[in-house]
Length: 263
Ligand code: 0L1
Ligand code: MG
Image (cartoon, rainbow, N blue to C red; front, side, top):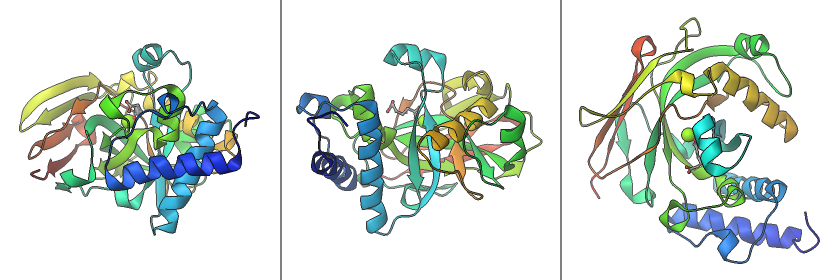
């Protein structure tokens, strides 16, 4: 924490971002409101904001990795990934409905999800990360920045739970599916809107799982058995609209889908 930012400041900033998320109301970027946070402070705000969710009865079920493509890191001028917690309230059932009223200006990304069968934390090899996987699934992540116009600095977005707000996981498959170069086609109402490859996720999504263990270890946390890890986007995010049906086809990994409610 720098000399000017106190614990009380971090708690009041966490209340601002948490309230924006809870009420689906856009706010000005923290950095434009005069809150200059270091990256470590931004993660402290994220943790305090998660505590507020937990006090309301939410349960952490996993983590999401962000900026896992080289293109997004270059765009943001950063050289590492970001991460944030996923809670049970963010889950949208596969084939279910996303409640538009809970979001500000949501976008959706085609991703891959891992389910862990044993804990992971710290620096692990790819083989160790892979051996901790119980199952894999196609997934859709809904990101919804709480900042006006989806504009933020790196510290702003980390403090805002890395824009996490929703996710759908398709049917879990045995971890034997080769994830290194799967075609990922995301459709709106049956029309392709984003086409990519799972290779866009750090060259291979398993690297994102190893990175998730590393960042958890750096935060003195453990990814527990039963934890879901969203590996990151395989294409650019697509803006959602009320009433649209979203479907991801990920070749032999299968599909994940949801319908957005009417406004
Ligand atoms: O890959 C991601 O999930 C990025 C999330 C944070 C940045 C954004 O909202 O675009
Ligand atoms: Mg994502």
